[in-house]
Length: 211
Image (cartoon, rainbow, N blue to C red; front, side, top):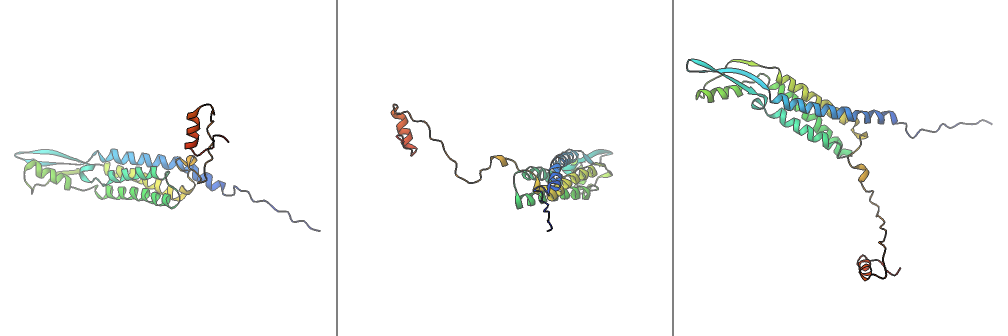
């Protein structure tokens, strides 16, 4: 008579994937926070330089990233909010927030690169400096800060992609404090029969002070 040995399935069969997902929490937080910091700092740096002809000389002009385009900094703030919100929601909500995180990084990167050779901000400053609406900036040059901004935005994008891939196994904030919906059992407060005020309080709570 033959015997068939049954191999019990481990309840932690998906532990490697779950463990990998949990290890990515710190990586995603680091990438998202670092990327947003880089974008916000780089957006405040000088992106373009030039000069405007005033009288017989020239007036040097500069424009920082926020003057050229405010979109990368705004999307970095959105990304930070989404990064925090990822841990505050679960299920489909977490998937949507993770997608928002990734899209904010992608949008910030694309907008920074698109504005890397922009001249409108300096042209506007040249028009103000010369009181001539037709004035244009001359000796225009651009710095590397738009591309540094885009690199920071790429980190936000990576954080969003990690959240999309592993976010389902990440913990949620305040999960240990959530109630399971079952009624909580209250322990009746002790009643001293010699104290009338305790008797009245027990009656107000719907308790039987004589039981």
